[in-house]
Length: 90
Image (cartoon, rainbow, N blue to C red; front, side, top):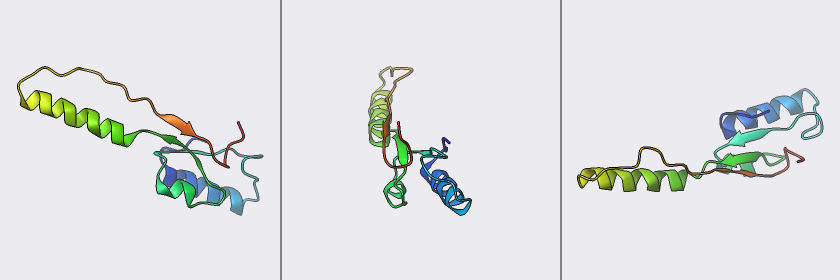
């Protein structure tokens, strides 16, 4: 199960526990944002780290260029990555 953010993944984990499902044996759960919440759950959530710090820096750099009258790059990619914890087994 892939959740749009870690809070929803934590909710799915709570639901799975209530239903008697084994995580990650019966259900694998991945959150998004790699927030502090992902390590506060039991078991700890696997989560996609969207590299919010890098995205903010890209935006700040683009704003500085624009405010200085210079062209900005139309598209910039900041790759995220999966932080594997206890809710996945791959």
